[in-house]
Image 1 (cartoon, one colour):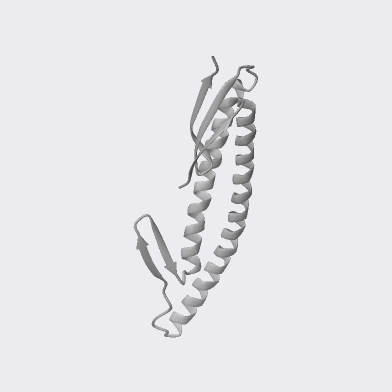
Image 2 (cartoon, rainbow, N blue to C red):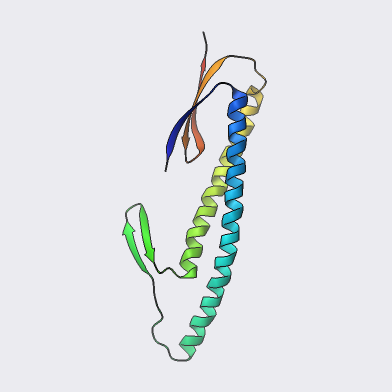
Length: 138
């Protein structure tokens, strides 16, 4: 997880940034959905091949090795099914981020037309605002 602090001069500038983040996340989501479809096709082909080999009496089929690193893992020689699970997790995370960004965007809309000077500091976690500090100038 990456955490970044950014400052904006106006709510309009912040809204523009949020819109850009939504578009970036949507592009990433589309790419991962294409990848996921390709991997699912390969996974189905692998399943059919494994079933055929089992029916021919092949006892052991290559298995991947997983190394657990607490918050992460390394998968050596992953099967298409394992690869599919990883990509599905990424797709779910991107969907949640897009929904959160859209909700934030909707909440900021009423502030867009306010003509006030303010310093806006935003804490971003993985490109999604987690805190917005709006400090009015005195």
